[in-house]
Length: 160
Image 1 (tube, helix red, strand yellow):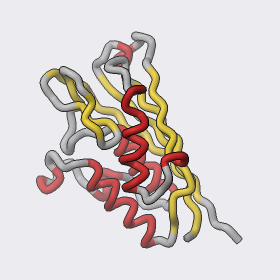
Image 2: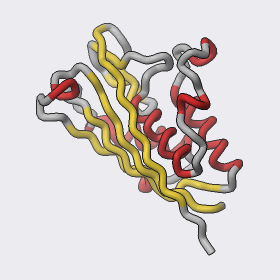
Image 3: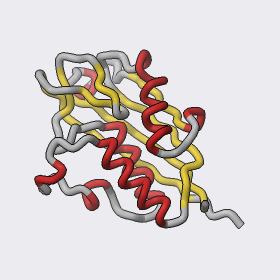
Image 4: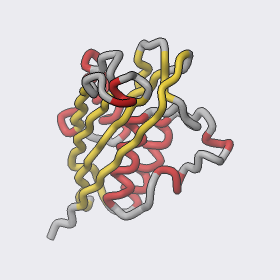
């Protein structure tokens, strides 16, 4: 009998001039970046929450508090590696994930293949099970006005 689990994650960060924009473990050329305690990688944070949620392991803030100085500026790829270690310890592996990043500019589509490869390596998966989509918010609200970035992720896990 298989024991599959579905998880859902969402993350939002404000955008500000002069910061680095990290999405999916890749630096995206931009004059602005996301504000956060870590490197503020909205996609990796949403993936972490989806993975954790699938196994009822709380959320990324529970495991990596934004008040803990040891996580200040941390590379979110490290957080994702640590989360995936928890998933494997519980006897699960990733079947697939599907994600969407909402960002008015810059365009993420030229970077998606590289982002897929980064995430697939961390999650010990093939790139064809890592779906990354990008969309704008049609200039509506804080996302459309380039004041914020958001990511959604759903994942499917199965017993190893």
